Amino acid sequence: MEYTFRKATPPDAPAIWEILQQAILRRRADGSNQWQDGYPNEDVVKSDIEKGNGFVLTKGDVIAGYTAIIVNDEPAYAGIEGKWLTEGDFIVVHRVAISENFIGQGLAKTLMNAVEDYARSQQIFSIKADTNFDNPGMLKTFEKLGYVYCGEVYFRGSARKAYEKVISK
Image (cartoon, rainbow, N blue to C red; front, side, top):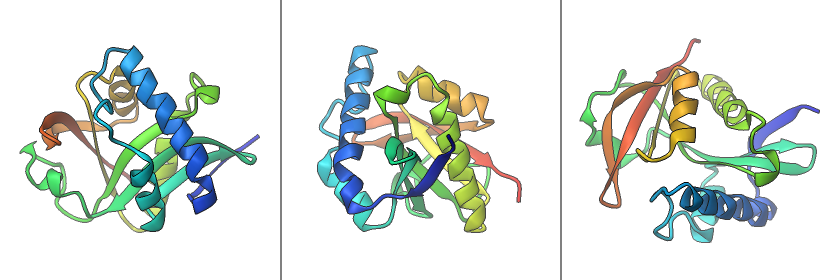
């Protein structure tokens, strides 16, 4: 069965929050500090959906993954300690999470490829993202997909590794 990537809707919020809670617990079990400070939370999910920034990857009627996509708006990225590859329009990817029921099936890659397709549909050819230094799964995903390490950005007082990928038209 094929996967579908679409904007999240309010009825999706409980399933999205469940997936994020699973990811928070996985990060903790891995010894990571990422997402261990009350973020993300249900209000973040609600806000993502209300602003049209929440997206889900579905298999049939089941939500397999979640991410937030924001266009040209991440204030922390202006203060990068390093240098972005581009200075034009960009997509920001935040809160990538895959359901426990789909872990190990390569869906982070599937989701990130769907983000690239979305960016192209918006005529945007730069994708920027960040993750904790102690998130080997996401770091590996960025590396596999051709993201370039650009430096560090700071969120809630903590450094994050910042990446950018320039995609083909």
